[in-house]
Image (cartoon, rainbow, N blue to C red):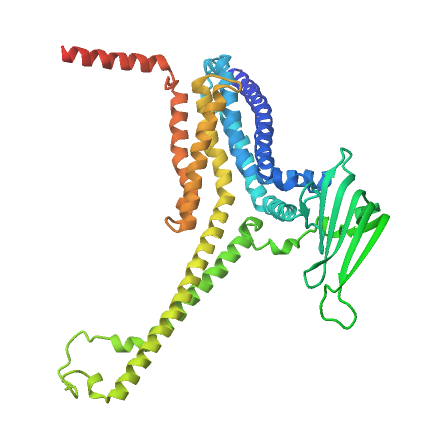
Length: 485
């Protein structure tokens, strides 16, 4: 009977922990994703605003960006939500009740470990299957959006070159944005000269159906056209002037529509590949590097025989033709020719080796970059587990829930993780450390800290009790004062 009661109690405690964790996790995940999305908008606001994009294009770009931010948002959400969950349980003395029922903190963490393990596995499959597709969609759409021309076709007070073959200046726009004042239009000739000029006091601009053309309806203006006369080579010999009450000029808007680049041009980047593609690419480039090393050896092999020194001196002695060496035994013209040929061969070998060395360095850097992307597929899952091992005991120790102290502590530990992982990744790409060590250094550093905090939380440590540290420093100060007396 007591065993049955304990089993029922464990189920209720596990359900309590799961309910306490799921809500903060979902909330913190959305908050972190929203903050990262705002950072994206602040970064690229100038490239997106004022270009006439449809609302669904901006929404699509934001959706793909949110998917690419999961790699940063998920570990931070796991850390923050676990601190909030166990901190709230400790603040409400629910952890004390659980321990009083004979259930240790480690046993109480079992359902959380299962949930975080499932999240880690899901994070791996997400980074291997969904993240490359999201990166491909995001970076290709962002590239096209950034190179898109501005939708402000005719700004005030400056000459606009948005339309090919025209330079248009509008002195003033009315508040409606369509009525124009003091318009000047230069039309460029094929040779680049501005021989056609149109000026009007006022005008109205509007777009045709489907945004195919921009039409300027000009009023009260004059048009000048310079051309060469009959049988004359001078292109500015004849001037034609036309006055008009009303006329229309039409401009093509096809270049202002969002033109999508072929996504196949971006698929060779490391962020757009899954684990199988990355390994195949790394193996292919590694074979090229190994082949280049063999080719370098074959290049210098014919010259090695001139530098071989025997291990033991030969008993047979060869007397040179001259004490000055073999070169002095040749005729002056033959000496010049021999030295010239030798220098030419040295320069040729040096140039070839330099080019192959540069190619070797480039291929090695590519291998490190793609190999680091392979490790990223696994470090995301490991980061969720490592930060959970830090967050759960920290929440039990500090016994504070909500968004106050847990947010501060989680941000500090996440910054430590992010800084260490960034330094390790840059060191890997620079070739300073091995790929595995550089990409896993943050996990290697944080996992012992998590295990230490788990031990302290299981033993009811007062590691964050400020009164304990005050008493320690007060005793230390008293000892020093007594020793001086």
